[in-house]
Image (cartoon, rainbow, N blue to C red; front, side, top):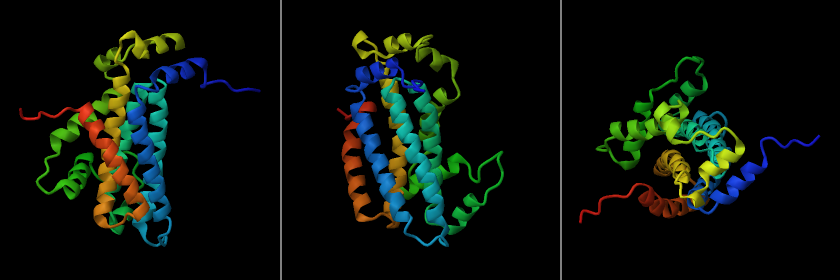
Length: 243
């Protein structure tokens, strides 16, 4: 028996409409996933008695899968759903970065059994990782609150944001809602969702580079990612030129 759901015609139509508009963000997402997969292969070479590569492999595989799934959602116009995955990517990227190459932290994460809370607070992890990459004077509280909060608008179904995202009662209405040719900018929600989730992953990869735990082929991927990221980042969040 043929299984058509969820690959219905509206998804194909949405992807055809959005492809050109979200191409830049999807390319960066693809490069990030490639770098993660290469790094996973590198970490698999460690002896299993070393705990931190085991923790990173588990987390990194989840991050790569979530980004791939989120990119697929963005291409089909499911921007709020991509944000939900983005919140997971955000949290996990900083978790892995916080574990770093510390076997004690890795063991704490691997042996954790409390389903009601995680080992460390998000704020603690974000502060530590960003300062390790960008310097000890880096301020993180507002940046973390705003970026993670934006992802959670979608994750938690914030009513105000939910209305902005458009309500589509049918697959046909969904396609109309996200069609850029009709003058809408709905695709920007998808680009922003990927922008918000990819930046922490790039920071995480940079933290591994600073530890010297990144082989040459992954470093080349990271260089390519940064070249693609910088113009994308400036377009999504224009900076004051000071003029």
